[in-house]
Image (cartoon, rainbow, N blue to C red; front, side, top):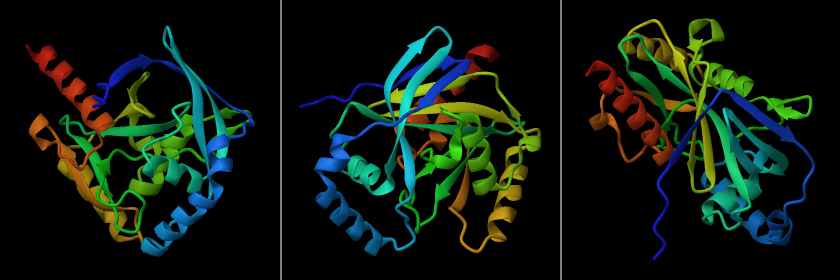
Length: 242
């Protein structure tokens, strides 16, 4: 029996993520199976779109920096790789997340709507990087987080203060680059503000907003890399008070 490795958190202040051409053998060799899988998923959720996304390889953590190379692939290949248990371990899904934290310490997360590929899951605003996140020949994770925050919550970069560091949570085939975004209003007020923005959208990505203040607020609908990050933050806050 394979026992999954626990999450590992690396704190860095710099990201060096280059985008370069690379042929993914998995996507080529399993093309017919991938297309069939996506056809099934599209029948289940007609709104999902087979756009282009970016996946990573060759991750390296050095003193204060996370570096990796990224390549372009279709969303159908990514979805099959994810749904089939990440059969190619040479590749990882590396994405940015904006950990909204209200003035009273509450973390604010969204529940994905039913029409999305991750329906029912609860996590910080984020998304698999795509071509809009490329700046020159590099992947702009800060820009990706800023864009996802705006699209999902309506908050602009003037509404929060970004921490100077990233907590990179490594778990299996995922690397979540999480940056705390401090918002100078209480959690309930922030939740109401985001909910008002969602109510004005024809088809919002989020169906609900959740607040996490203590460990008992964590649920099974939250990915492990998110709960590991929050547990570490709550433990630090508790130590600071003692």
